Length: 95
Image (cartoon, rainbow, N blue to C red; front, top):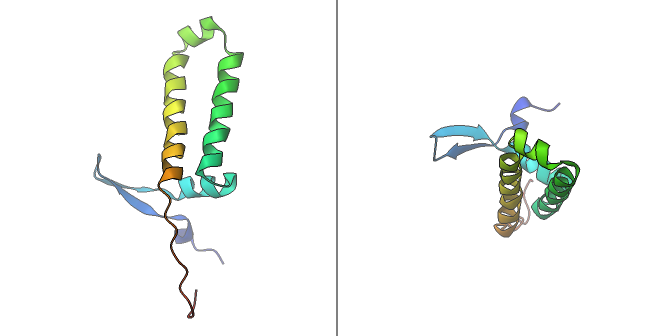
């Protein structure tokens, strides 16, 4: 049986001094096959979003600001993919 705590990975946010569950980030990474793939997927979503919006919609709904936020999130995935360090598996013993 799956324990509720299996889906929690708490990390301290130094800017707010609060703990946040970052497990959804790793679930997304696993679902997309890596942070690099998440970057590429979000890049395609942004391009599609920009292509279907006309200038009036972009201006009225402050879509330019929203698009900039999406690019920030997209770039975060690129940075996460660059910070990967593999941990060697322990030999012997229980896993």
